[in-house]
Image 1 (cartoon, rainbow, N blue to C red):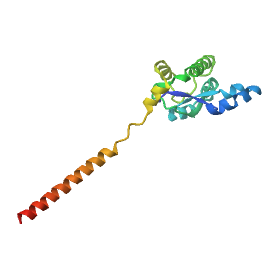
Image 2 (cartoon, rainbow, N blue to C red):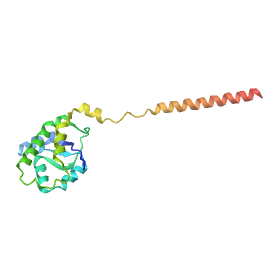
Image 3 (cartoon, rainbow, N blue to C red):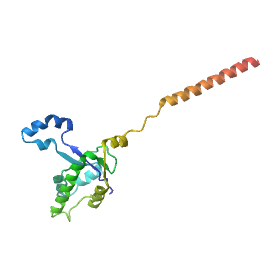
Image 4 (cartoon, rainbow, N blue to C red):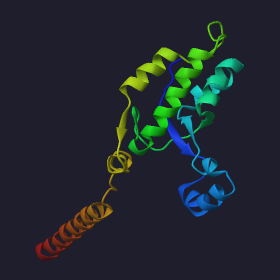
Length: 174
């Protein structure tokens, strides 16, 4: 099965909440929780495949900071928010370490997840800045209804004028 291997970083705590409570979390020794992020794939079929993979496969992903949920930042295919680059690199590096250290993945059922395709995605994916992302995901401009209204009024007015001229000519000719 062909999957899309795009993934985005998801903040466990939204930025507004983290900013408000980060000091308190730091004071009680839980500061890392406030800045925790998970790498989540955008393709729901890919997430379902990983959920159905062997436990050893799921473990290397989960231990690297990937989650088994779907999230889409809105970045176009093959692109990711540039501000997430460091966090993405950390997760990918941890995943590579986990795969290298795992002993039982050779015969494991990856349930269709193709590590080669994932590596190809990683080598071609490019960051996108917030301005580019807004432009890439902006909805198309609305159709100008006023133009249609003007056309309708013009056509209607022309028909009234033709009818009036016809009536006048009919009256004059009689």
